[in-house]
Length: 103
Ligand code: TYC
Image 1: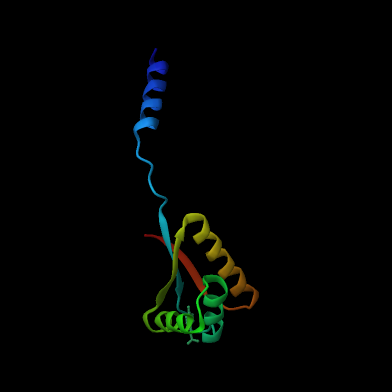
Image 2: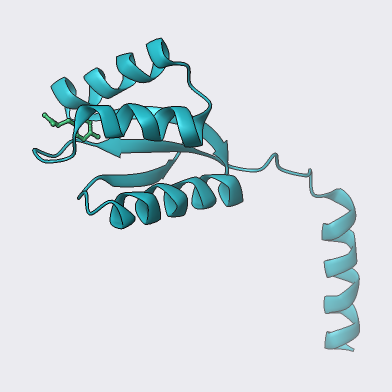
């Protein structure tokens, strides 16, 4: 009886729960002393669809403030962007760091 009651409750909860919109994540770049500025601009153009002017502005924000926002995405897309940036930086032997933060 307890298990049947539990199942009823589960079905009722499923019916009444409001669907939550997916959580969104900021993808950020972090400053370091070694990655060339031009490489960071390339990353922002290549993976975040920024034009040269937008990419340069974000790169300078990271350089002067320590971090900067590349974009805000659903979880899976944010994860993919972070992986792509880290792989690309590693290939080019730059220590550039990239992270995601729930908004
Ligand atoms: N600080 C780096 C330099 O002076 C440039 C840089 C900018 C590095 C942004 C990382 O995310 C970064 N070459």
